[in-house]
Length: 314
Length: 274
Ligand SMILES: Nc1ncnc2c1ncn2[C@@H]1O[C@H](COP(=O)(O)OP(=O)(O)O)[C@@H](O)[C@H]1O
Ligand SMILES: [Mg+2]
Image (cartoon, rainbow over all chains, first blue to last red):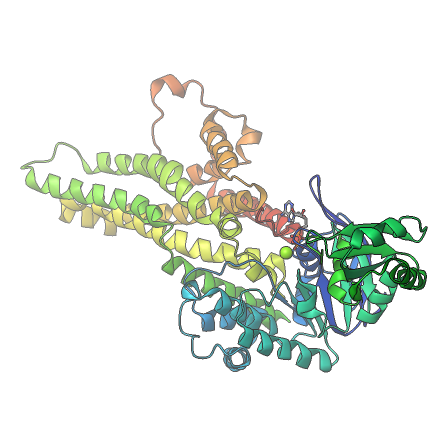
């Protein structure tokens, strides 16, 4: 077991009969890692397991060599901004952070100093004396973030941290992740929207229905997908003519005509042959092609392909 | 390392007390504790109006023994502790706030200890205070005779015993209900089981009697309450337990329960439901 990685070895979690995650194997190096998948894909389950809030049904987890069953060690090096949106009753934002640090066992003076630093970092100093109960969604998100970073942990785990933030706060929060990642620390960010996090991530983990479907550097994930059938979108005046010719080809797995009858989305295992064929069809039948674009170029469509696609371009 | 433990426990204790003071949820516990005080206060005022008393000071001390056994031990302290202690963990599960503690680098055993101490300090102030107040009030109307009973007679000794028993009751029931709140989704069911068990105690064989809280408490009460006739035949008399066994016995039962609760807390998961 490595002391410098976060590892999952064949980890499964079942909630009674319901699958949370299944047979997950991961090795997460330092930097920003994003965990992407639609709602119910197991992101929160994975994060709760990693932070020791729940226990795996099977398998083993180590966070820099520490087992999550030992909160007294783990919670010193890990900070978790959970999705739970409830706060101890009656506390102000400042008290929320302050008491969290006191329970860590720090001296009152140190707690004060760290509380102020954390509040400052997330821009909550002004509102710190108000009760958390009176905070907006965005403010609650930020005070939770302050709690996660207050003890300066080596590993930062953030469950959908950008939810409910305005564009300004979003940019600031992303800057915070990047600062953290640049220090050689571990930042895990979950999201159900890939393009929200793909630009800032050093690596991505795609989850679907409790399984890890792709993992690695964003480029790697793209290439992995390239070996799969590729999606190409053709905008033209008579897509059905093209479609009829395509079905004669072995390499075309699927072709769909868009509802406006001006586009054709197809999946092929051999893009080069497709382009050759397309040229021939244009010459033979005088097809007016408006655009040809590989739909996979955008990681979002890769993701939608992997996840089984809600929406899509057609 | 030891200093760290203590700091963590004290922090939990202080935060819990702060939350208790701010919360409106447990109001009925205070009402429960106030009831006998109000009752004995009315008794005093009522007796003052009467030209001559119909009962003796001894009567009042037996009446108090009855109030203490039936109202305090079997009622107010039992249910009060249920309200206070079973919510220490269950309440935070329902409010979805327990992860706040579970994400701190604190041994769960210490969290159990800190929460238990916070519940205990509230329960003790409320119920030991209430016991003392109503005891001092019940004979008030005898005036100088009552003062004499307290100072020169067995009064102060009895008061001390009642306060000790009330405190021990909080220790014992506190431990039991803290565990119920950790183990069960709905602590009402185990609470009902405990209630029946505790009330069956006089009729149980000697060995089983000892696995309870009320058994130790009863043998520490200074004044015996006579058992009414239909039940008296069914009561199995265990040898009266001397205080030097009863007190450690109760503390031991509580400690076992608390250790078990700590083990459960270590394995417990955050599960707020969907
Ligand atoms: N406490 C729970 N009890 C039962 N099922 C749960 C619980 N938490 C999550 N699940 C189930 O586990 C699956 C994964 O959920 P979750 O990890 O919350 O996904 P995500 O965070 O990606 O939306 C879902 O099917 C969800 O219904
Ligand atoms: Mg989630």
